[in-house]
Length: 462
Image 1 (spheres, rainbow, N blue to C red):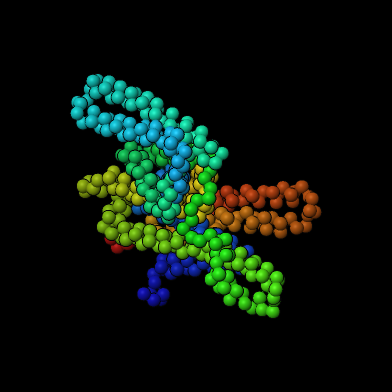
Image 2 (tube, rainbow, N blue to C red):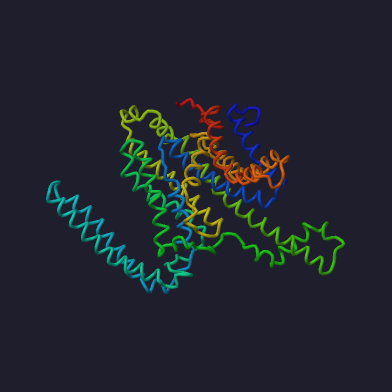
């Protein structure tokens, strides 16, 4: 299809992508290409998170406030998959932890058997209560002894079990699976109730997940963090020492190196190699993340335009009518909730991979829930293109708000003395421009474009 045959919304979508690309290129020229590529990678991950929230909200009208928890589960997968196991920790308490998991599995199975075999009544309540109490104390007996022993093993460096020592890229689907399993548990409890109960449940579960990850040091060191995670791309130092890379750098910068010889040439070449190695690594990440985003986007578009997607939109618009036509609303909501959470989990694992470390203390609702929701709302809920553009635009604004705010405030106070208290106070306030800008962006979007930059397209099937 030629550009001239695009619909107004199609032209608007194309313009949004071109405009976003120009903004990122502008950052490359005004700041540096390294900064621009870091921004691109984080925008790609944010777009994937926004896509997951859009699957829940834009497809089915499910309001989830637990995005931060699903992202943290994805990050946890990066540790569990890529870290090498700690033999001393496994020897000290691994058996007890496995035993506690086995007893817990038996307890859950026993609960299901009691519900299946015994008739409702006082006898079943008594048996169920006794089973749960006995199982709880047995689990704690093994669990406490095991975790205490594990956390005592060289706590400054390890103090946890480690992982499976597999390539970290495998943590991306595993992160999605962990998030999907937790979403299934939440959905089975809350999706049959009113929508506000789902919001409350996801908010609470998200905070519980963060609290567990922070405090259970045997799992992933808690707030001590896990650094030096595996990488799916080459390391900068390895590239700088590779002959083929040095040859490529020398060819790229041949004009700058022309006429320079001896130690001066070696120093220049070393500087170019150091900078270009960072650029190359960031480009590798960008290629990987773009491939994941494109795959998820294509799948999301196919799902949205399929009979399943039309059914979900019908349920979203009128649950009563859809239920009257024989649709299992709760089951379909559960499917959508799990799918969206899985996508967020994948993005969480990708973010940990990019950072090279797992830091539970950085997971906060402002960054991983509120900001993602702003991306979906401003971009346009119900439109996958809108989620991607919203992810890029809002993260771009979030990162650039502080330097842009400092630049503007510096211009406004240029006539004041350097030590003027008003000038100093305003320049110090530049760090607080981000929340202010996000609130302003959301307010303007709701006032002038309540359906987002790229609204949900009106289809003939609706």
